[in-house]
Structure formats: C-alpha cells, structure tokens
Length: 237
Image 1: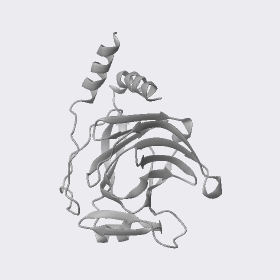
Image 2: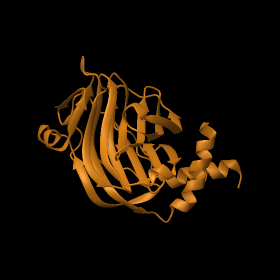
Image 3: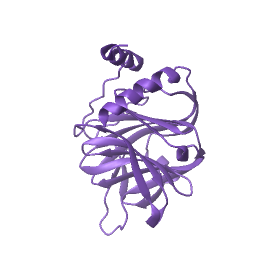
Image 4: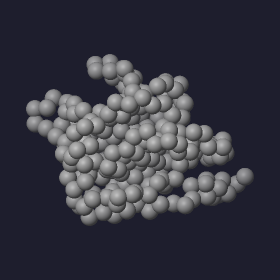
C-alpha cells in the first residue's frame, strides 16, 4: 500500500477526532467530560473516579511532597519551599489492565505526569514543556531509573485544558492527548500488577481534573491498528 494511503488509513482509525476544549482560567470542568476514543482496549467496569473536590482529595490521596489544593473543582499542584521532594500525591488501588483518563493543564510547571507502580516504579507518562513521553521505570528511591520509549513534540497552550488517555494492557501501553497525538510503548516489565497511581509535577503550577480509571478489555481492532501506530512511532525517531 502506498505511504499516503497507509497514513490515511491510520487517520481513519482515529476518527472521530476530538478537539481540545479551551477553558477560561479558574473555571470548573463540565460535570461529565466526554470520553476519549480508545485505540487498543475497550472500557470495562469503573474502578476509580475523582472529580477533585476538597472532600475527595482529603479522603482518597496521600501527599508526599509539594503544595496541593483544590481550586474551583480542579486540583492544583506546585512546589513547596523546603519540601525536599517534587510535588506528588498517591492513591493506592489494585489494578493491572486499565484505561485512565484525566484532564490536565500546564500553568507554569516545568513538567507533570502520571506514575504507576507497585513495590517499585513501573511506568510514567510525562508531560514536559515541549513534549509528552512514555517512560519505562524501574527501581525505587536511589535506584530509580527511567527509559524513554516514545516521545511526541508538543506546543502546549497556557490556560488550555487537555485530555490524557492512557491504555494499558499486558506489556503494551498507548497514551494519547485529545484523540490526536498518540504514543506507544511496550515492555515485559509492564505486564505486572500495579498497586498505586501517582500524580506528579515539578514547578508551579500543574492542574489535574476529572480522573477516571476503568478495567480494560481487548479490542479486536487492535491487531490492525498496532502496525500503523508503530509506523508513526518510527517517523518520530
């Protein structure tokens, strides 16, 4: 198949494309944010959800650094003087194959992201000033190591809300922003049980909102979609 037709086929698989919602600074997200389109999996039962109120933040999360507060129905994280650790909060839960959706906004932070682990770090999906990445993690504390598996250059708009969708099944992970920018990573180290999700950032401020986690089940269309994602990944190298 000619290259142009392959690219067109790839784009058709991603339809319908959802445009990112521009949101005035400080206002709350819609009560029911739209579901981003999955590519690798199908959503199953809902495992966890937090729209981020003062009550849910206090009861569902443990703070391990930084200054975190709920403002107008969204979670804001930033550095804390003398904290000794980058801003980080954790929610403990058992999970393996999951779909994770969360809105985010960069508002001065140098980086932010989503981290998953058990007794060690396993995976991070990182949002930097000029890109987002899938990073394979290992170790803990002083032994922590990261290996970037995929990267997409981005030009983030300050004050704009984006939607991150992470699909994780077995050894494969797909991460996408606003149904348009798609990353792929795979490692046998991913095919493990996880016991926590962490929201992390560096700098002031990063915003998170409307986090939901579902069980993930196989999508029969994935076998046809995977080669096209791998083709796009090769072009990014």
